[in-house]
Amino acid sequence: MIRRLLIANRGEIALRIIRTCRRMGVQTVAVYSDADRDAPHVEAADEAVRLGPAPAAESYLKIDAVIEAARASGADAIHPGYGFLSENAAFARACEAAGIVFVGPSADVIDRMGSKTAAREAVRAGGVPVVPGRTAASQSPAAIREAVEAVGLPALLKAVAGGGGKGMRTVRSAGEIDAAIGAASREAERAFGDGTLYVERLIAEPRHVEVQVFGDTAGTVLHLFERDCSLQRRHQKVIEEAPAPRLAPGVRARLHAAAVAAARAVGYVNAGTVEFLLEGEGEDASFYFLEMNTRLQVEHPVTEMVTGLDLVELQLVVASGAPLPIRQDDVAVRGHAIECRVYAEDARRLLPQSGRLVHYREPPAAEGLRLDAGVRRGQRITVHYDPMIAKLVAHGATRDQAIERAIHGLRHYEILGLRHNLRS
Image 1 (spheres, rainbow, N blue to C red):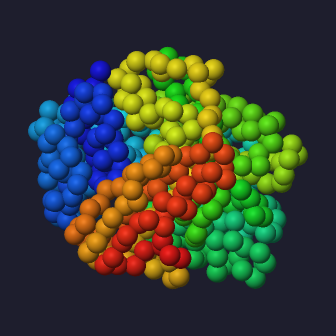
Image 2: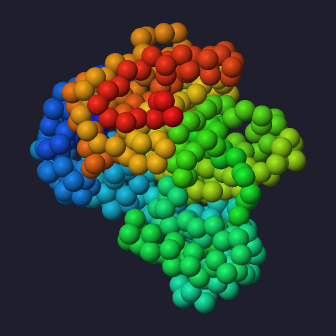
C-alpha cells in the first residue's frame, strides 16, 4: 500500500486528496510555488516542498522539480490531481523511471487518449460510436477545406491535442472555412504547442453526458454511472449533476456499456471519464464518443455523493496494485447530486479576476451539502492559476431537492474583495 503520497497540485483538489489520505493513514507531501507559500494545502499536509516561482511553468509544471520533491521527501507515490501534469505522459514516464508510483493510467494510455484522432480510432475499434469526422490528408488549408467539404456543413474544426474548447471553431458556410482554419490552428498552437486540426460533423445542441469508469490491473473495468455536464460557458463546465436527468433507461444502459468498452479497448487502469455527445430524446436518442479524460475530474464529487464511494481512495488502492474492492453489482445510485463551481470572474464578460479575498465565509453546514474549497480569508487569487474559489455540491432524495439545497447554499456564501459568479 502507498505510505507517503506527494500531491502534485494545489488548492481545492490538494485539500480533497489530503482528507482521504488522513482517513487512510497515508502521509502527505504538498508542493507549492512562491505564490502559494501560505496556502491552506501547504498547511494541511504532513510536509511541504517549494517548487519555484509563481508561474506554473516555473513550479507546478516542472517535472524535474516535482520528481526531486518526491525523492527528497521520501514519497513513494504521486497523485497529479487534475490540470497541470495530470494528463502529461512525460510526467507519468518520469515517475516510472524514478521508481515512484503514478496515481493514474499508464503513460502509453495517456498518450493514446490525449490525441483526439488516436482516441477515436481506439474506441471505434472497440465498437463505440464516434462523431462522423475526418482527418485531413495534410495540415494545409486546402486539405483541411477538403475534409470539411467531405464531412459536410455545418462542421466543427477541433484541435487534435488539448481540450477546454481551445482550438475549436464552428463552420456553417463555405465562406467561413479558411478564416476558421487559421483561427483554430493558431489558438491550438498557442494553447497546446500543436496546431494540428481534424474535422467533425457539428452535432446541433447536444447534451454533454460523461461516464465515470474505473479499471484495475486485474482487468476489471467498472462504470460508476453518469454525469450531465451540459450547462457550460465557452465550453467550460459550470454546473454538473448525477445522474443525468431525462435519460431513457435503454440509452443509459448503452452509455454505460460504451464507456466500459472504450476503457477496455485501451487497457485502462485507475479513474477515468468517457465523455459523450447526446442528441435526441427518449429511447431514440443517439450518442457519440467525444473524448476520454485520463484523470480524476473536477466534478467527481457528484458521483461520490450518489454512490457513497470515495474515488480518491479507490485510486490509491488501484495504484498500489490491489484489485478494485467492489463489483459492478455493488454500485448503485442513491438520490441526486448537483455541483456548482464558484469562480473569481467577471461573469458578464467571462474574464477571470485576481485580487485578495478580503472576506470569505462559506455557507453553514447543512444536510446534503458538501463544500470543497482551497482558499481562506485574506488569500490572494492570482493570475497564475485557475480562478475557481470553491465547489458547492448538494445532494437530495430527488433532483428538485438537490436544486433547492444548492440554491440555499449558494445564497449563503459571503465573498468580498473581487468579482465572482455567485450573483450572475
